[in-house]
Image (cartoon, rainbow, N blue to C red; front, top):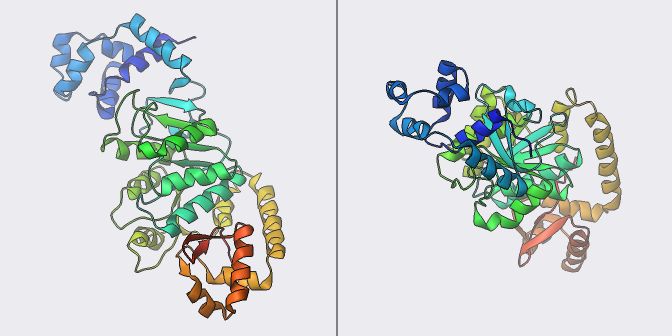
Length: 377
């Protein structure tokens, strides 16, 4: 398996986690290349006051190229890939960042440069509304050949990936650990599915744990890989907003799903809208922002409208009445009786049919929510 000396040096350097991103940048600016940095004598290295002691120790340990080459080959045989900025398949979107990762580990694929991509992010402890909205928006965007980027975390991230998989699209997870570590553990199956139907990326070496300070750093990559960022739910002070800040610095479009002013999980989204983020009510609100850069989406928009019309024809007037009274907040059967004015037998029949059509679901005994994004006029 071919591996240039430059790539091998970066592969070895990637394991020197005590050398921070800014320190690497400063060293490259000062010495010109990674090879030159590694050739610096101990006395000179010790004189660099702006370099941390831990970084100096890590650098002066040197590199055993033969050992690193053998490890690199073993890694590649396991299906784990390594890419540096000079590689032709390094994601072009990242190169436009002011702080692109020097290297990336990945399993599966990398996002395609010529296809649109949208990051979907939000609260880990999301509501039913947030989880269903994230899943449905991701599914519909994926059906439009829009790549879905997220962080493979609990909550909104996980539902976004699942939605993209349901939409038979590509989805990519950017994680804060080595790509051979599944975090959180309960997402094991999701990790596998995302790897098979997209890819998992990280700038941390194999075996690197999911440390708290890794996640804010990886958020810039989530933003960097996307054309726009959709925030589904976020508290006023939220880690989600770090990704938004990265996106704003990079000139990305910011979209936000509005919520109740009394809902703590909607304060962050509502504030973003107040500050200029685009209020999103349907997938088309995002698609129309991307059409100019990706003209093929115009055709998809037409198909989407045709599907929507077909959907309308498959729903009876009484079924539509029930759908209009449902949302992503659970509603009890008794409340639906009051809201719709239907009798018990008729409402039971309609609920059964809507469940059979996959439009609503029962999340607890006689409590129902929408299973689909239903926009009524």
